[in-house]
Image (tube, rainbow, N blue to C red; front, side, top):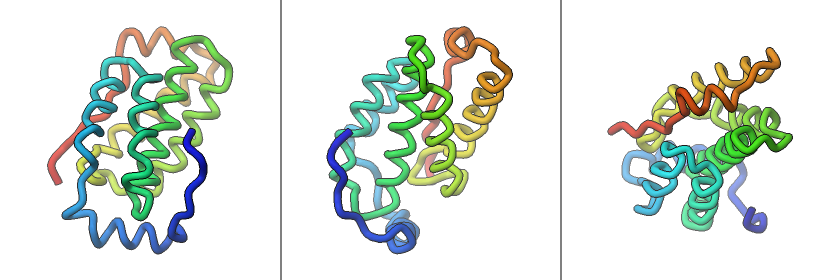
Length: 144
């Protein structure tokens, strides 16, 4: 992950996101991260999202990107059989909980629902990697 940057305190950053959210969008390269995630290329998606962090560090989009990085890393770990997937998915889910169902065109509600289902699969000791192959998670984009 890139080095930690000085950021506005969370309430100020959230307020900035609410005020500017109507006009602000993600940089054009955000679509590449979404495309990679939706193709099951979770490692590449996390890298694409990380590259955008500097561009949005002064508003709520930063927090949303960090959540998407954590979710992508969690799914990558799961798909590749690495430990720590449940922890990373949980961290991402916690961050996504702070956002409305639709944030900057990202259908956060849909992703939260999928994460809750996948975390329940992991908590039950079932094979999430098999589910990813049959019904992969997606990041859906919608107009505001």
